[in-house]
Length: 266
Image 1 (tube, one colour):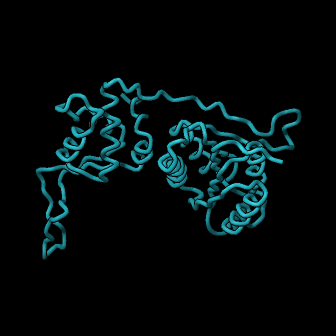
Image 2: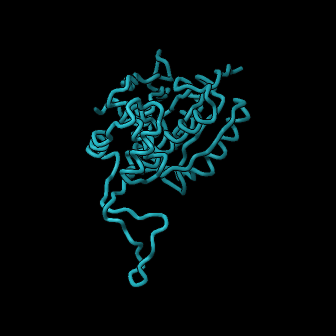
Image 3: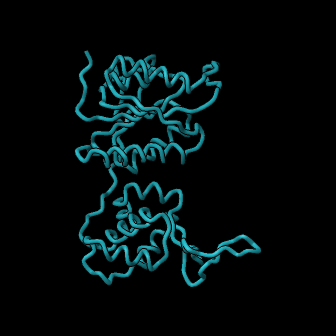
């Protein structure tokens, strides 16, 4: 009888050796398992042709029956690090929004299976999100050792929240994420409305420079308003060149899921 851990969520990368995911479940049975799998047919290192969508679906079904857990399949690109990182961080962020009782300690990422890009992406996501990670050893080479190894992931510094510039920068990143894209004036007004900001006239230029220098946001000249008129000859919308367009980069989207991380960038 496998003992289930309270509110634990496992995220596992799935590949040609599903036994590594099974061993992770046997180690600690979660309430929910997210299985990251790839599409199409692939010939793995074992020489076999794998149809991962079919294999992943069968694995989830068997895991639900055997371990009495809830399983969810998440399709990712086997060789796109951004795809895998974004999927893992989104899972963690969404779960915490849906259940305030869930903490980062409730998440474990099994990054043993899948392609090398999947493993690299999972390891990076683990660090960004500040969650635990496990690696399942090949049983042939683990005599007198534990099969499941909890990886010594270094804990990143968390924003101290003392009203310093790093706190403002994390709030600025959060607001840009909420709006999708914005002008400087829109962002300034949104930040001033935030009750965490004590000085309502606080400038945001420093925060924008920090985020831009680290390529977490892009700042482009010109702004297309929602009510902008289209040029009948070119088909392009009229752009207000007096404004700028501020939005997240792909990397910025990861940090925006965990805005306190920018406290380590100042």
